[in-house]
Amino acid sequence: RAASWRCCCYDDRAERLLVAPLRGRRENDDMGQEGDTRTPNLELARTLIPPEGNDWGAIIGDREAEARFMARVRPLVHANFETVWRHAPGGSESRTGVEATMAALRQVGAGFESLIAVPEVYVDLGDRVLVLLRRSGRTVDGVEFSEEGAVVYSIQGGLLRRMELYADREIAFADTGLSDAEARDRGVPVDEI
Image 1: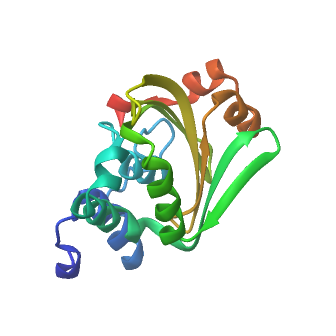
Image 2: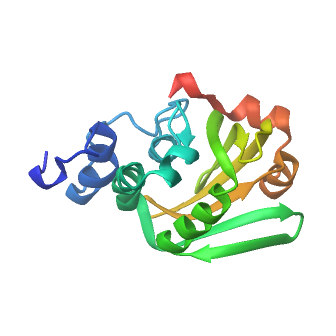
């Protein structure tokens, strides 16, 4: 293992995703085989939104937590990274770059005391991964909520190239060509990755 990767965000996933490809081989020879739930794209998605979820209230509200999150995520993001918020079929807004995305998330996060996104199912779609998730929390007005959502990660060269955030899973299903049942049938539950 390269000593330069040993830091607060170092783990075996980082080794497999970042260091091993640079050596021209995989550390785990069985990764990516038919029926294997540990494909590199699923591993990347799991690193971006781990089984315990991302607590955006804590990440956005605490500079140290945000720095830890960025240390974990920044090495996994393509230089031309783009985030797209998909509000309605055919309608969206986007930001280019990690800093622009974080600035938008800080602005959105200001309306919440807590906002936690927890994955339910990861679906490997080749160069994309659909993640069905549940968001819950409390607004600054004290209103508690729990809702279904989704994110689609587009992966290029082993790095996150584009992140599409969906408040409405039906739009995500339309964009990916899957139904809820098909996504769950093809997907891998959080506890199996």
